[in-house]
Image (cartoon, rainbow, N blue to C red):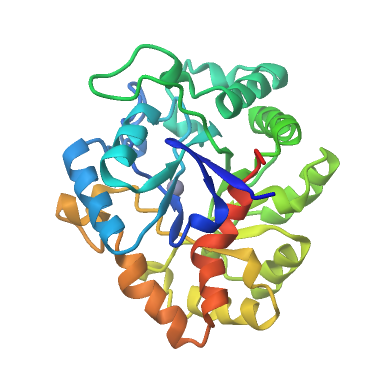
Length: 319
Ligand SMILES: [Zn+2]
C-alpha cells in the first residue's frame, strides 16, 4: 500500500514528490505583542506567489512549511498559494519557541491533554484558522497539518516538557512525525531517550538546523538510530558550509546513512527571497545544491533521498 503525504491541498503519494525543501517558511504574519527581534514578516501574497512559481518552474515539488499555529501561520493562505502555483505545501501543528507568541498565549498554559487534543485535531480534522471564518478568496475547507513541531532550546523542562509529552501522545495516536527546531543542535542527544521513554520511535523524529553543530560522530549515532537530520546552512556563509555541511554529507553517505538527511533552505526572511529583492531565493536548491550533490559524488538514488524521499517518507503517516 502506498504511503501518502497530507498536503494543504490533499493527499499525495510519496513517490510523486521529486524535489522537496524539507524546512521552509512560506507565510508568516507575526502575532501582535511579540518582541521586535522575533517579528518576521513574510506575508506579501503576490511576491510569495511569484517565488513559488519560480520554484515550481525549476522542478520544485514540495515545501514543508514549519510555522505552527499562533506563531504567524495561516494555512488558508498556504492552501491558496499552493492552488495558484502548483507547489505542494505541508502545514505544521505543534509549537515554536516561546518568543514567537504573545505573553497570554494558551499554548504556554495548556496541560498535556489539552495540547495533545489540539495537535491531534489539527492533524486529523484541520488547523484552527481553517476551521473558523475564511479570509477573502482563500480556502473554504479545513486544511490539516502533516507534522508536529516543537521549538527546543536545549532543555526538556517546564512547559516545553509538557508540550513534548503532548507531541508524543499525538504522534503515537496518529503516526505523525515530530519536527524539532533546535538551537544549533544544542543538546539534541537528550531528545532520543526522552521520546523513547514516551513511546515514540526515533524514526518519527526529525531534528532541524543540526548542521550548525557539525559533529560527525553525533550525527552518525542519531542517523543510525533512525533520526532524520535536517541540514540548512547551504546558503549561510557565516556557518562556513564548505567546511561543515559539505563535509557532513559525504561522511554520512559513505557510512550508508543517505536515508537520514533532509536538505532544507529555511528561508524565513524576505531578504532571502528573490521576489522581495533578496538572495539567493528558493531556487538555490535546484541551481546550487543539486549540482553540488552530483559534484561530490552522490548517485541519483542518494540525491533523490536527500532532496525528496527522506522527508516525504517521514511526513507520511495516514496510510
Ligand atoms: Zn525554520
